[in-house]
Length: 438
Image (cartoon, rainbow, N blue to C red; front, side):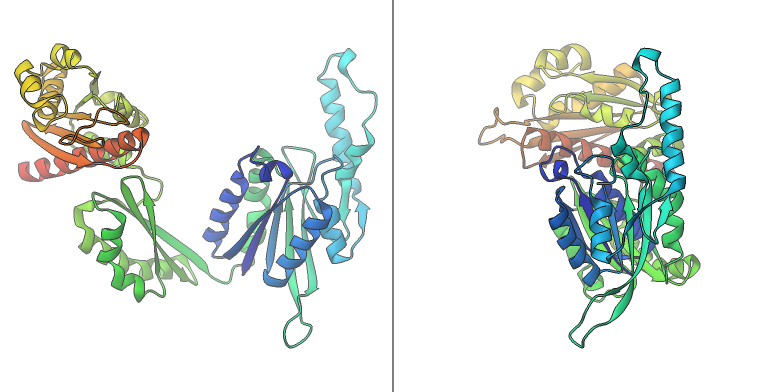
């Protein structure tokens, strides 16, 4: 099944509103195993929308439109669909009664001086439906959605050929669109599935995108089913492995050998196989499992690392203290970094990073600690210590590991990459130390 998304609204074209609907619907269509080749955004213009619809019907089996179902003059999605399918707009009495009930309820909850004596005529526009369409109830607004099934002559090189097309019209506000899709459209679309798609996400840290892809280039070049799709994130590489099958059990069997092979090749660089699990969640889970406490000491990241850790529920049981020691004076005062260390090696050095982690662990009485010091830029770099140079240290059960990193990008990018690498270093140190203890 080929699906096409059409987002209607001039405000989307102008960038006044971020198109979160397209993102949501793309993911849902992928989960259903539908193929998505086109996403179109068109303004509130019936002529242009009509042309977009005609093109979509020639190449796609299912067209999902969002927006343009409201009561105002520029809401014209229904009108365009009706024109393309050569159908009339007719009154839906059930929707009309629901609109009346909605406004009656709204009036009853307003002071008398603010109540409207009658419903303005443009609201009845929302009660008009495309002839022969299925009305989809909106539990969160007045504009219903619609499902239109039609035999459409898509045309071909060999002449006319009619195909069954399905056009789904959804309201634009995400608070209305998402519940309608989840509760009513999703069950309808599931009945159209001829196979299911099952995906697993392999998340990797500590290896760059190009190196990671090179390590599995043979798998990518020979892929068929399952498929492997790489996604690069700041400081991370994700591989989505997807299998198509008749049922979930068969899809799982197809996934297993590929996942095992990826695990063999990437080893401890893989931090999770769960799509929604973040690196910080994995780190906090490890700390809980090993019954370890944590302290943090940050300079160039200014609390960004601690903030990521604090995002995880339950971290209060293990995070002892966090220090932001941006100046040399703060490093001396709060972490016990030696003055001679700062004088001889500087604030951005392996030695200072080491003493930051040890000092934080000692003062907080923590089992583990992370120290981060570097030059985030745009100023402050030298020939020997350029912008992007960051030292990350990890104290774990008496052992200190320091990693020298050289990042590219603007100030925020350097800080974000520092946090990712610090989380990864802490994860690896916990795994290594606890494996040695075992």
